[in-house]
Amino acid sequence: MSKKLELFTESAIREMTRLSDQYDAINLAQGMPDFEPHPELVAAAVKAIEGGFNQYPITWGQKNLRDAIARKVKEYNGIDADGEKNVTVTCGSTEAVASAVLGLADPGDMVVVTDPFYENYVPNAIMANTRLEYIPFEAKDLHLDPERLKNLMENRPRLIIINTPNNPAGKVFERAELKLLADLCEEFNCIAITDEIYEHIIYDGKQHVSLATIGNMSERTVTVNGASKTYSVTGWRVGWAVAAEPLSNAVRKIHDYLTIGAPTPFQEALVTALNFKPAFYVKLASMYDKKRKLMMKILEECDIKYYKPEGAYYILAEAPSQFKDGQEFAEALLMKARVAVLPVVALYHDKKLGEKMVRFVFCKQDETLREVQHRLKGLKFN
Image (cartoon, rainbow, N blue to C red; front, side, top):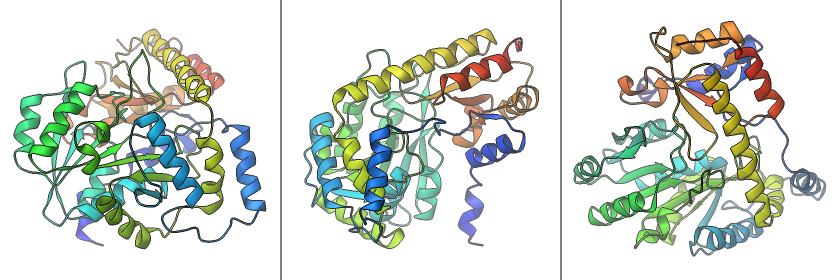
């Protein structure tokens, strides 16, 4: 085996999903809806398959989808993009991030990620033979300390990877934070990769801001997104990267040899989704807000402390005092209540920050969440 594999472990999320299946548990460990996508989207996929869109796509993505993405990022994000030059369709947003890291960083370059992080970012950086540095979220509001960030950026990293809204923390980056980051990227010649896949799942009046719209960051940002979360099609594996032409060309070269292309019929179908009216996204955020509030109520009933998420569909919670760590707490929930959650220490570089934390997913049917409430009823941990 490659020595690189010694530097990262098997996915903790996939392991908890395996245990969830083994114990016939409700899986709140993996960010995967247990409900179907919009019927129009399903019908569009069937129509595409029956209509003959079953062979290799254009490598960068079907033209009508790239054009739809370019139109969408202009209208919603405020990013000017040309579907021919600036948009690359990938096998999920995960591949978009991987292609950007592999295409833009050389061995030995520094890559900065937040702590905690979505689990794929670190293996991506390791596979590119880069050096990782981490900037932790701090205090109850999970902010990035400006001085600490500036000191880190003075080391001139090649890349910084930001996820907003954030998985697993539920943090939404404010414009002021992004402005600081933009200023530092420009000052120290750093490229940003922003994973914005939860952009429409935001609460409490928060606003999604794309880093590429601040200052001159359109020239040094790869904006990553995808269909999985917004349209509840995690199995379709269609994502995209939007970037200035020089960055886009680097992403495309890696993507071409990494996966060739994302699934053709699903690309065709997603043109339908990208033409949904604004009301669809309002309804989506409202739906998830109700699920968030129900999940928070369940945790409160069990006296489990948590961070209130501003976006995405995860809640970071603290293992009660009688458990030595999040792993032990997750095992107790699995065995006593048949509810699977994720011990989040695997998503932290500083293990002390994450050792007591678990992550609850709430992208589930209301019936599923009420069953979780029933299974946890009467369990008091503090």
